[in-house]
Structures are given as structure tokens and as C-alpha cells.
Amino acid sequence: MSEIGKSGIKCWAEDDRPREKLLLKGASALSDAELIAILIGSGNREETAVELSQRVLKHSFGNLIELSKLSIHDLTQFKGIGEVKAISIVAALELGKRRRRADIHDKVQITKSEQAFEILQEQLGASSFEQFAAVLLNRANRVIRTIMISSGGITGTVVDPKKVFKLALENNATSMILGHNHPSGQVQPSEADISLTRKMKQAGDILEIAILDHIIIGDEKYYSFADDGRI
Image (tube, one colour):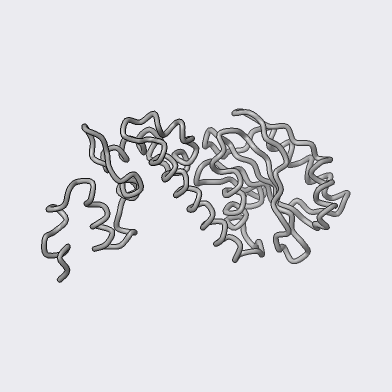
């Protein structure tokens, strides 16, 4: 048995325990707060690293996507988190996004709404403002590229169909999947969403660029017009 195993985690200083737990049980055994505690290393005079991490997560509603929206300045407002610790948290969350993107690249052929959600979530999921994007596809439903179309405010964004189809034609796309986020986290389509989807589909029929789906993203969930039989 290792020295760690003999002594037990309880014998270690509070701020060291998440690291030793990871060594003994693996990263998957740790809570989000414990993983963040490893990043920041130490807490403050009143809190251990884990307690400080729990407080930061609570501020973000226990949601890592919400946490990823915090800036370095936001994070340094918590007592015990200086600029260096804040940078570590931001960098780790960015690595998580990039790993997700790398996984997505192995699924370049879109056959179901969940795959489209994964691609669009990477682009839109962490935004505090409503944004609109399109996944351009070739004849085999393989991704050509994902393009950002517009960025608006908290409650909406303006989409110009002419711009969308111009970009689709320039990239030789034969179909596309539309997507936008709802910063509120609610994914049910508004009347404006329904109207835009209908308008885009009609324009696509004329130009022979099929609109296969329109995905609305709210945090870790989504709504698919195609799955709901509305496109």
C-alpha cells in the first residue's frame, strides 16, 4: 500500500485532500468543486479551497457553463481568488471546450439533431447574448464549416437571410442547420423563431439549399424543429 493509502486522506491538510483523492480514486471521483479546488490550490483564511470553490459554483448556479461565462475580473471578486487563480480556472474551462470540439470533429457527418447540438453548443452555449449560427453541409451531410451569422442582445438578434444564403453559396453548401441560443436557458421557440424558420425554409427551397433543422440551445438542453416535425 502506498504512503498515501496508509495515512489516509484525512491526515492531509484540507487544501491537499482533493489532490490525494484524485491520486487514489481518479479524476472522475471528484466533484466539480474539488476539481476547481485543485486548480486554485488554496482557499482563504475563512474557507478551504473546496469551500471557496463551492461558493464560486453556487454563484454560477452549480453550472459549469455559467461558470465559463465569468471573466477573470468576475472571478477575482471572490476573496481568495487572485488573477493567477482566475487565469487557471479560465484556461481549464477553455481546454474543456476544446476537448469537446476535438470530439465533435470525429463526427463530421450529421445524422441526428444531437450531433448538430454538440457543434452549435460549442459555438453558442456559453454566450450571455443571443447569437445565430449555421452549420453548412455538403450532399453527404458532412460539415463544411460552422459560421456565425449575427450577435445581438439578451433577448434577441437580427438575422438577414440574404447573408446566410450568400455564405452558403460561397461555401458550396447543399444544406444547412440553423442554430441560435436563448440566454434565458428556455428552449421553446418564440413566434419570431417560428416565423424565421419558415422564411428560411422557403428561401432554401427556391435556392435548392435545404434547411434540415433549426436548433435552439439553452445551457445543456436544446429544441429541434426537425425532431418536433416543424420543418
